[in-house]
Length: 260
Image (cartoon, rainbow, N blue to C red; front, top):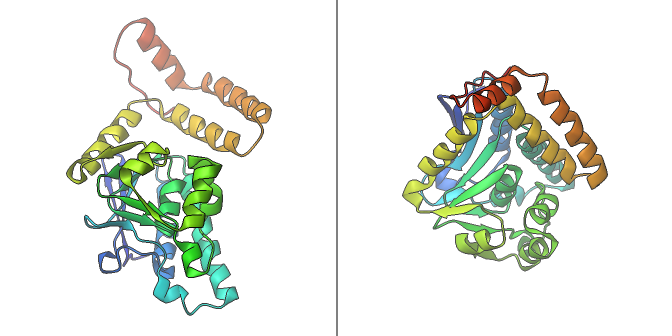
């Protein structure tokens, strides 16, 4: 599938996925979401991609939301179809075996904030802005925002952002836990790549299993979550990486994980 609105490159195991509609502030229309879904499917099956970074084209916008011009003419059936493919795509991102970092380089509004929340964690440029403006347009968040945002920042902050439909800056986003770190715009991608390389230095299977355990645990009671953790913990002892990591520690040597 040829892409008109996104770009993807694999830089030595770091997959960089860029939403590229700069004239529309990287807003998500149906074509863009369809391309994103296709690309995520390919990433999912590509074992050479160890960590993914999602960002937006240019220095102004990560994703400024869904394309309001396109949405304004939709009927309920069309609106539901657009919401469903977007929800499915973001859930696919959330459940990728690879860790996913959002490099929020500017506006992350509506669908952009929802996309960022579908990533495992978020780093933001100093100029980044976050918000869920949907109720000011007569709709609710429809790409997972009513579910993921409160899980990321807590029910109170999540409701406030959605009900007020206002924007918050990067520092406020950091204060409430929406982003992990705020850095100058020119340092954002290098910072995300540095973190990606640190993740890649750890045992790949263990990282994937830890991600799965966290994601499952958030959506169930703690007893069920701990029981699942017990299973993945035990599974790690069947891997060569576990033997390598512990032998390297005991013998005070460099570790060399193979993902086996």
